[in-house]
Amino acid sequence: MSQVPNGRVHTIFHDVRDLTPFREGYVRTPVRGLADGVNGVLSGVSGRDHARLSLVGSVPRLKMLSSKPAKAMHEAVFSSTDPDRLLAFARTNPGWAGLCHIMAGLLVYKHGGFLRASELLQRGLTTRIDDDASQFSAMYLGQVVTRVEVAERIEVPVLFSEESVFLALAHCLREMGMTEAALEAVAALPPSLPSALARCTAAFSLERHRDVVVWTEGLLNTDDLSAALLLIRARSQRARGDFESAQAALREVLRRRKTNLALKNDALTDRALLALDQGRRTLTPWSRRAAPPAVLESVEVIRKDAEMRRLWENDFRQLGGE
Image (cartoon, rainbow, N blue to C red; front, top):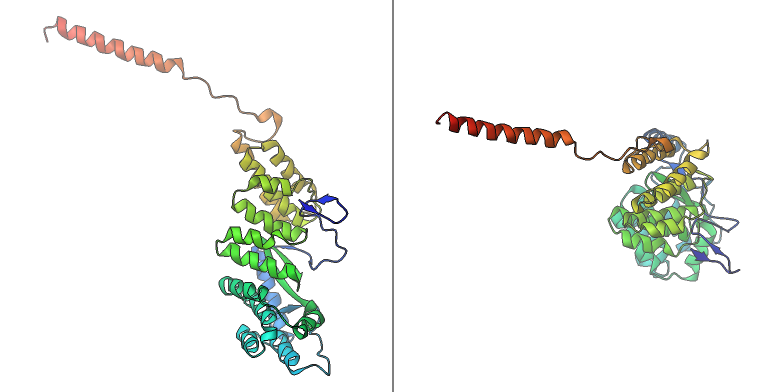
């Protein structure tokens, strides 16, 4: 739960901000992944290298009277695919070093280098920047968008902000097996569905199922992000043995007709596993399996017959002089 200034308490998925840095979430599937690759080729043909930092719209134009560091930073951020160029600029301009490390970390994250990206992002977060770098960030970096994986197969495009940096860092830490650190990285973020997904994903991996259930209390299926979060909630409830609540969460995932098909399939699979856990074929009320019968009496009868035959054979041998 999180406390807001007016005294009301909201769960970690309830975002009260009018404007957020998040775009529409995506459920990654093999077909979507293939389409994304084709889209990358097409965008490269149109003049924008797919390996560069992604943008919403076109590259922001540099102001005429900008300083030399601002011009060099603009070129390194929007025209280069090499993070080492940003790091070289950081060494010659210490006041810009923190911002350079963060932008280099986001670029490496886009290329899939989780270890190096986590090191760069953490270093950038702990390095102060001067006023010129801060003004550059506010003026030009608002269009930079990072596509962050907040849960398994769930990706969210996030505009440059503290959310984009911390969510990318949390994903890097999860990939490296540092789940505790990943949970700490997103714990202080404002409430939102993407941050709640990242937080509950880490908590579920740590088997903190009670926390997941408390954090997602009252959640409804309003979009694919909330449906993915409901799946995590259902799995935590199943792990705790609360089968009825888990079934209710899965029903909520299946309730909305426009829920992504992959999420619906996951919910149906989880329902089947839930039925198996309860020893039932389905989750209908009349499908409860009868208790296993006691040991059959015939087994004991057979055992007695075998014993009596053995005694009879012994007596027969004795009468025959054997």
